[in-house]
Length: 302
Image: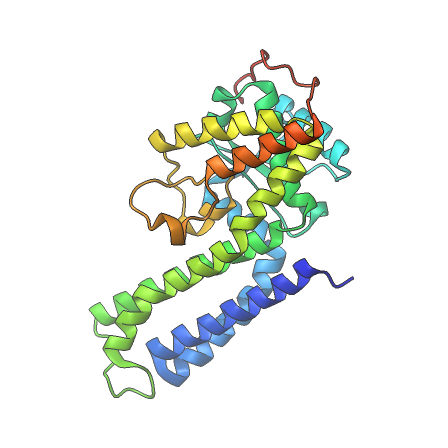
């Protein structure tokens, strides 16, 4: 059945396809536009069928078996059952920075990834709440859109970098075909990654609120998720996760630090806003979860 998320995915593919064609045209004239279109067609196919694998690679994550991380698999399985979802695959990022994300093209192909750092700093309730949030992304069916955005943003950024190298090592003259010349090329090198980022952010900010709300319903513990978000935000300020910027919007909290135009380019709503909404949910519904006691700490991943 055609859904709103299907419409958004279609519009995203169309917008990013157009952007690839435009960038190709500015950098390479008519032949560049054709190349951009061909690349876009290939990526439309690849980003749908292999977006989860691409996102995992860009995030530096590896899938782990039950034998490698049995407790993590058990939490994911229990909460997936509560959410009415097939059990997602599980992946781990070897990093001290605490964070997590979900990917996959649909609930039957979902995957939840966590860093080794998140297991060290969160208690059992908080870790379960974070996984509930990621399952919220899967149940809300917005993981495909996120993964496609990550794939295209990475490709557009790479294309801009290739254009930069082309101009440094000879490039094309101002009168070559119908492109925009060296100044157009310089402009696109600056603007193409920004345009891709804006498209990413346009589809990611509101989805975090939705996943928080769904995660609170699935895990039944909005206070644990609020507490986890506060811890993750505090740690991420001091221990950034050095991932490809194209996948930064996938994570539960922004993994990158340093200079940014926060109000325009933040891939996440503020943690303060998210925490306030979660505590409103707790106060309104009186939700609380006794399945994951606060004083039980998670063991380290193998």
